[in-house]
Image (tube, rainbow over all chains, first blue to last red; front, side, top):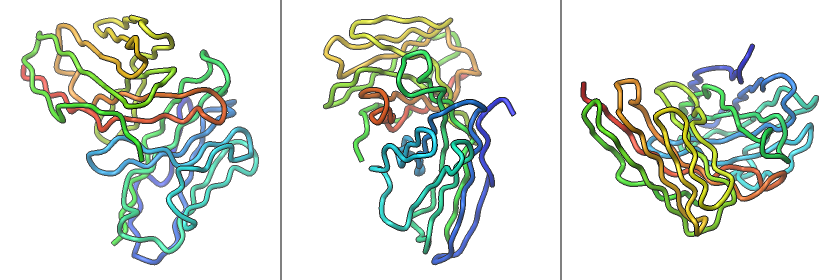
Length: 117
Length: 113
């Protein structure tokens, strides 16, 4: 597709369960970002990949959160032992590069709405 | 985590009016961006500013990068109903490993026809 896609669009789970959220970046984009957006708030940074490696994971709230990008394209955000406070919209963004003005524009996907009951 | 300061939380204007939104930060940013988010969608970039003092326009939108690099404003002229949405400012420190965006809480704009 032309834009960033995220699946599922909605996810309802029970407290304590494990969830995986998927992001398909724009083809050819080397940089990929995960953000979390709580109700009434702006997106907050979680983790950034350049290629296959996590260049900055300083935004991950705790060790229940983990993300991978094994082939430098699709990324999966994994949340273990979910808690009610994890309920939020999880946004993925990609950019062509992260080291030059013209290629830095981050294009966002529609997000995955996670609800932990 | 740190967020930029945007207020008020909501703005209500009449169609055809101009509206201005400010964004401030206690930290310096080297890039300022303005995004718009519609319900159920991700944020969409409106304007990017790369230099202190820069004034940039995109159609009816005009934005400025503050001289101190700690603030920015967005102006929308002659508002129309499709301007309704949430407007976020975002700052970026640098490139590469520092290329994450820091967002404000957003301003919800309502336009009365």
